[in-house]
Amino acid sequence: MSEEKASGGCSCGKLRYQISQPPKVVAICHCRSCQLAAGAESVGWAVCASSAFTWLTPEPKYFKSSENVTRSFCGDCGTALSYQANADYIDVTLASFDKPEQFPPKNEVWLKHRISWNPANPNLKSFEEAGS
Ligand SMILES: [Zn+2]
Ligand SMILES: [Zn+2]
Image 1: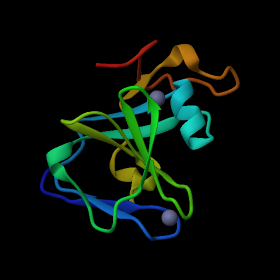
Image 2 (image 1 turned 135 degrees about the horizontal axis):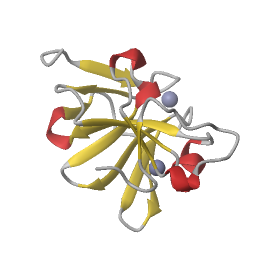
Image 3 (image 1 turned 30 degrees about the vertical axis):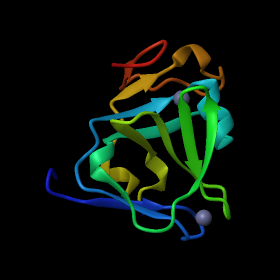
Image 4 (image 1 turned 90 degrees about the vertical axis):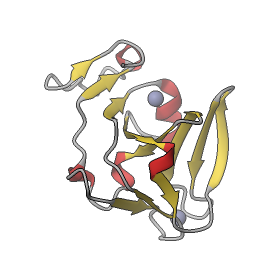
């Protein structure tokens, strides 16, 4: 799989991206900021090297969800696509990949913000806050 490229994009097809290396970390995040950004109880992320990530289409809309965090989404259909807190890494929403099965999560982070009716996954390594 290390040679495999993976691609994905938004619901309406206007935005497409590609990664040229497998993600460094794959995690489910329960933080409140992700919940609001996606309108969902948790969000799966592929943490990718920025150098391995490319937009294949015009760039998305950006939103600063906190001082150092920029999230992107499709301005037409609203699909949440990325999260970036520093220049080296870009986190990509797992569900927006064409083959989400490709990158199963290993970690579950920000469990302190977990909504009680959304059970934690006992098969994942759990973190109360950000994982490592
Ligand atoms: Zn779209
Ligand atoms: Zn989060």
